[in-house]
Length: 176
Length: 406
Image (spheres, each protein chain N blue to C red):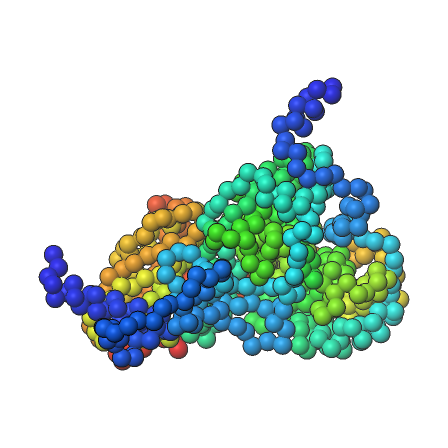
């Protein structure tokens, strides 16, 4: 059984080295929508309120209404309107994305400075601002993937080409 | 066919056209007299060349308090040929341009693979490479065109598109080295910028034509373009060509990251949003005469512009000079490469009256570039991304050119 593997390996260019499991763990910050990759730690909206006020409100507004940056709360029920408001509560399909994005990219001017507990707490607070979880709900690796986002089923696959005609067929292409 | 008079007029028109396009060219100064006396020596050889001090085309910068999360626009109105100088390639950063020492940079490939691997930049440059010419376009390009106030010049209207020769290793080679497992379907690709920008890339596209690029237009990538390593995903929205590439995790599912859920999704009038809208539809733009330029009196001109498609080659570009009543084929300049800018040219005699110039392209899939009205009829006004409507420019009797709706 060794030979086929050996042949396959010899056919490769043999560049790169094998990382240690510790190296992969240190590099791999990915969080899947099913919660795979979420780290240990936890937080509540009550705990996240002060962190949000100190680290997030300057750009996103005291209640998530948005100031110098995008709003993170509100807008539910507006997606069909002429002025849709796309926020975590009205638009984002997965709660895990909040943890992942805050953890890797926020605060904008100092990404990577919040602890896992702080990120869980801020995630909980943003969900609370949107009326999705209670103020004392414990958010962690097990509970976060179970949070039902209001717009979870709002996304559809790409139907393009959807506009205009296609030369040759001579027939008009219609929308979905 | 042509007598000397008309050839001369065409030449005059063309020279005027170049003068209008190349704004920095000092055409209004006195002609240089033939020198008869002793002449000054020019500059000596230099280690790294710079453009002429008379040339001043620059990327258009936004007015923003967060220029690290912003975009700059290629001055397409000043372009010639199909390649964008690396220094004028559009930018879209989410957390600024990182300063990366290539000797310390690594690319980790892991997840659903038989052999996780860490590559140095030297190791990747040592592998068999290819060079391909491809456009990159932000799917938010021309987002302003959905509304009533459209871009006043080519840069403001369409400047988040550029075209380069990219040199790199097929991503399929790296995946082959690592041995992709049976359940693998997606790749989570991550950059080394401050926000560790990431996107989920389907394995099929990764195996088909995606590059891990280290070269651009004959030299190393510019820092703004992902130095020392970036993805180039041909024909797809620019955001997925992850810059400063540091990690690829092979998975069975997309990770629904912020930039494929909150952003880069297209909201429809019925309240649903399209997700994973990767392909850039065929699009064309007249770069001369375009908004902000000026024609120097009636006569012969060459209308020219760019066309491109994420679905392959450009097969045809038609130009209308009469408000869309009639369309005529433009000349397509070779090379016509798949998923690259194609330059088109169209001779036009301007009679001095107001005229509306438009271009409409067809790609090899048979897709015809739609009008703004056709796009809005299907997608409404709030889908933000993937605007590829026909762009009209209006030539006024005084020779000035504006966005036709202004």
